[in-house]
Length: 52
Image 1 (cartoon, rainbow, N blue to C red):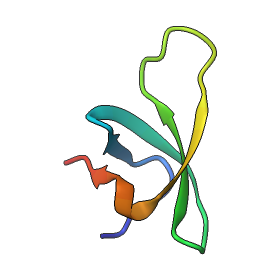
Image 2: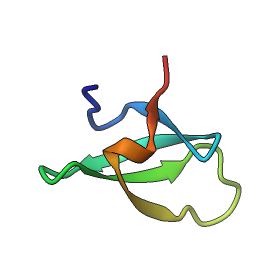
Image 3: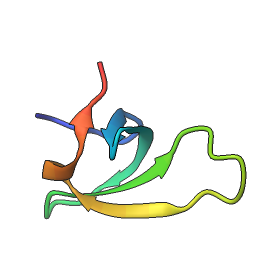
């Protein structure tokens, strides 16, 4: 699965946008439509699903 910056992914059944992809297979993601200050989450690629 190829995930790039700007892609939408599902993490813990919620939609997130990919902010950065690290060469170590980790991603920085941010929840889509978060009403307050957005939190950036660092997760491994294996923990997310690409959103169609």
